[in-house]
Length: 253
Image (tube, rainbow, N blue to C red; front, side):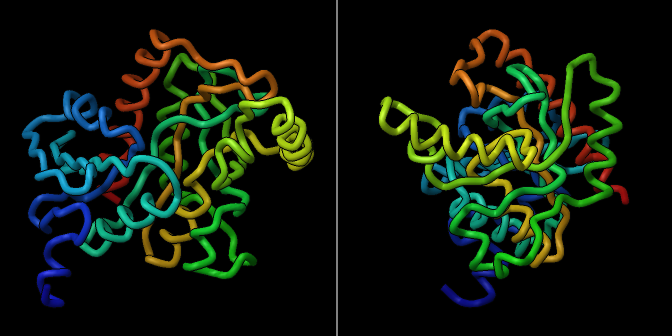
């Protein structure tokens, strides 16, 4: 593949420059791509590659792309990097996070920044470099969240690579180890944990792009209780609306 071809068509997601919009929403679950497409008009589905689904549609006169990365920081940053190479400078990850008090199940959680405990962000910048969300994008998201009837919290996320080794315990032995980590999380005042945010915020800064994360709190860090499917489906639709409105607005700045 020539350098020109690499620039005009993304290596992994397979999208061309003319197939993407002015802003991008990054989701984990590939099934969300069809569902978020229902909230846009003039929809175009990019040919799927490696299970990475992408759709571009119109919202309020702005073209917005949504791409699913699956799970984890390495592939999430690949997707961001490729979309950035195609000209996108505004990114928002939406999805799910583990809630830490005062956030509770069903609340929205917005990342002002993130603790860099992932293994991907150091490939972009040394650990002393802060993972901070874009101010203008978060201001836009705050305004939209304030209009919602849902409870929401903004603060610092913790981003970890090991879901079953650092965030969610299947066995009693592992739970004791994770409880020690959760004590640190509470001491630091984190509001949620995930597997992508710190890497995406760091990469975006280095790439000269805006980025943030907005999630639904779906698992309680203290009890490991999970949100029920019906409520999650309702919250997902609201999250799509908030995200698309925010990206429409930020694209005009």
